[in-house]
Image (cartoon, rainbow, N blue to C red):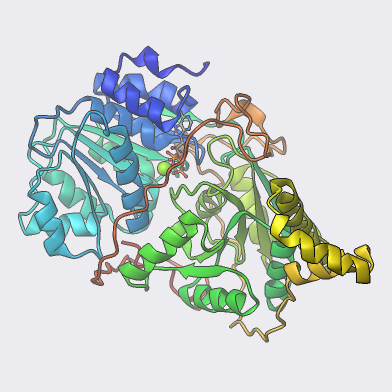
Length: 526
Ligand SMILES: Nc1ncnc2c1ncn2[C@@H]1O[C@H](COP(=O)(O)OP(=O)(O)OP(=O)(O)O)[C@@H](O)[C@H]1O
Ligand SMILES: [Mg+2]
């Protein structure tokens, strides 16, 4: 089907105005398909590739049903991580800007007394992580008797994190005649269990072409021994000079060590994982969103749902265990019609696991050679030259011209310019870096299907853009600079302030097929 315009949905003018303000010109395929059903009140299972606007697909209908004068909690959105809850709350906030609804994020690690105070302002929409929501329900500071709409964003991840019981307990508090919607880019078969329990006659809305991962992501892998991964990463970052990059590591220790090593080598990097205080997590995310750091090193805490504009590269420093995680990690780039690159480091013993990921995601990942030292140097020089030319074009150089003329009288111009480039490029610091080696991930045997309905794999789809997945209108207003391609004004609204507290809910550890030697997955997302 062709994409619809937002005016086709018969939305209130104040909601339409907010959509226009966000710069959305037409609905994406998942929005075109799910908004009409959702407005009718139908239960929904929505699946579409990463970065294709699922948040607004549930957000727009949900806010359309709530009245400004209401003072009850009418909608509950659950998300697996704190950062995602905050981000979804921000998008809802933007969508309700003109309508004037009240929404509130509720998540662990934030001062509960402050949350209780904020709840007194009678929000109609709550966006929360399951553990903290349950905490409020038990304290009777949140009552869900009047909820009309429930959304489980990243439903499969919440199951995987062991939230099933919490979700059950929470949903017991919500009236049975509510509308329930599940959304994710991946729907492994076990999602059916959740759907059967919590949804009534759901409409399956899926926008999935042959490959599960987003089509605008250029995927590649580099075969590299464990001990050479760091050198490979440095070279890759130098060669590609990402605008913003997310580097995924398997464990918290890995993330800490890697972030520190990158800093030592002069990269502007910081780490994010579930053992940091909420204050630290907020600070890192804020810095990454505003570009004051350009490499975010993270565990899978950052794999789901996070939408940071300008992420041009994702690097799997360590391969993820699950194909779903691969799809979500790489989906942090190539969003909203933009292109992105995803590189995965694969140790020789992990090649089988990579093939498993390829089979499940139905996408052949081409191998690329390790960038050479020369390519890395050339990449850095190119970026420096580009920066220099930008300054030349800006034309504001008068105060330097006197000294330039003086220098040119004494030295050769090529020599002078080379020296300037050298200075700007900065010498790479050769600081010694020792990372604790990680064990290789072993190939897992499992039914190769991350989609709902259990369709059989139909072979590889090596063809990018097959099926036309994302569906953003990328041709309009291309922004000359090479990055744009779709029109929207991205004002990241800075996030909520930092709070202290250390509520970390323990997730149930997932079964490991690595004889328990694999360090636990980051189990404190919430
Ligand atoms: N109709 C639209 N036109 C242009 N941009 C849009 C539209 N709808 C959503 N967006 C923007 O696209 C980006 C990605 O949206 P969103 O985060 O909802 O994706 P998602 O499908 O939930 O991805 P993920 O699976 O990673 O969670 C956001 O910046 C969002 O504001
Ligand atoms: Mg999302």
